[in-house]
Image (cartoon, rainbow, N blue to C red; front, side):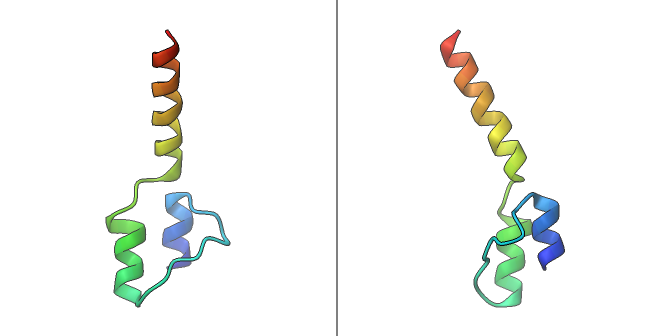
Length: 50
């Protein structure tokens, strides 16, 4: 489970709560990698300034 969260870009100390299947759904099934969210947010901010 921890490796799946790390692959998605979550920090090592990020706490994911719930039973095993629910934790996997949160990390793998429902989450976008944090780096993707950051990149999209920065691109949106730059576009709004233009």
